Length: 602
Image (cartoon, helix red, strand yellow):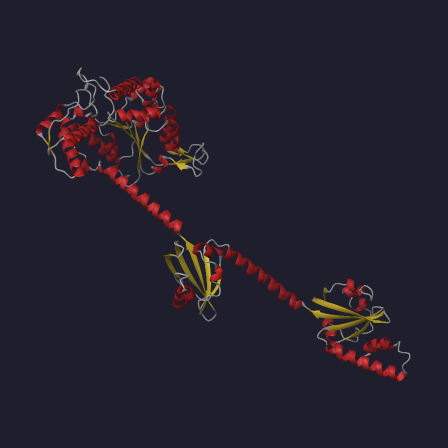
């Protein structure tokens, strides 16, 4: 070829000492060598002289540049390949030309070799390779690598444990969550067969064989070797022939979930027991009476229970106001719904608001970070019993009135209101009308509460109930202590003759006292309370020869102090203020000294 001979001639031009025949023969040998070399090359070859004229190509170049050899040989590179980076190449700057470039819609890779003679460049040979397909392959490989990394990240950062095996049970992959749940390092698992791991006691079980044989998902719950409750799910991955290729097992730690569920069940069981115990006393068979007065009370309660009207129960301490409230709830359409009780006088004012209405997170110092629902929310669709409503502070009476009017509750510190469907039953032993006159109870709240009132007469006005109550109290005590005691007729007669200022609560306490002190199975008169004192010890030391101890005298003085403060103040808040002490402290001590309340003078 002319091009090859051109290079050969340049290579031997300096061999002047050789004869013309020798130079011709050498040129022929070099030309044949170049011819066989470039044609055998696995790449396209193109040579340029110092003027950037194409002086040599092989057949792959014609195919690559989509031009015939005749259209390329002896042509300037910038004329035949004007869009090529080679248009500006010279024998001096060839190294600055990029090795990869686009030409004729193809991505080419090139390497270049400079041919010199006597240290002077005479030609530049370029080798080209079409890497278009390789580039696409690399892109696909890179994309696959990215997807593989992404999937590995998903598997590795999954909260659930993931264990992957082939169909033979050989461990292929284990994520760090599985290590955390099982307590086993993946180094001990990867590459090992599940059957060997189970046999060695490293794993407690394997689902792989079962999943492969059944060709379906298998789930099992168990306690693993790390003493955790886990749920294991093995999922088959099928090949094109429908055979299981891999098994992916998910392991979820449900220890905390099981613990929370057990606690929930325990709390639910405890709530059910409390509810059963709460209504046991108010069940029809446990409400005993013999008087027409209490029969009228139950008749009114039965009628009221069929409606959703607010009920106000009035009566002295110990007359059974809560029993009637429970009776109304039990016989209402809300009987299967919550029954919530709160004693408005037993909780400090600064805590009562959050107890009733709940609070949002951070509502006050010490508030739970999760907030807390109030009793109105807990009683939603059910009944809320507000005992001792007369002790409710004025500051909360307006909030209660707003809920009764709007049916919406707003948590302390919050701005959003929530609809609640709650039936209100209130009770008090106070004269609310007198409190309205004194300015300590809102009249609008009173009228809202007093839609239907149920007045329970004191025990002294329904003495026909006493024998029935006494028999029921004795039966409960006999069942509690496993004995068979009985009440003498004289004892019953004595009970009928007493005034019972503490009402049913005082009656039950008195009978239990005689039950405990009696030696035989027949209970007679052992120690009667002083008249008007309801079992008080106010005259116990009237004998001049009997001098009380300092502790006894101190207790008597304390009782009298609290009694007089309560009679004067009419409420635990005012009584506490009179004695210069906090209401919670006063209330706690007052309940210790007078569990049945005190009898107000007529």
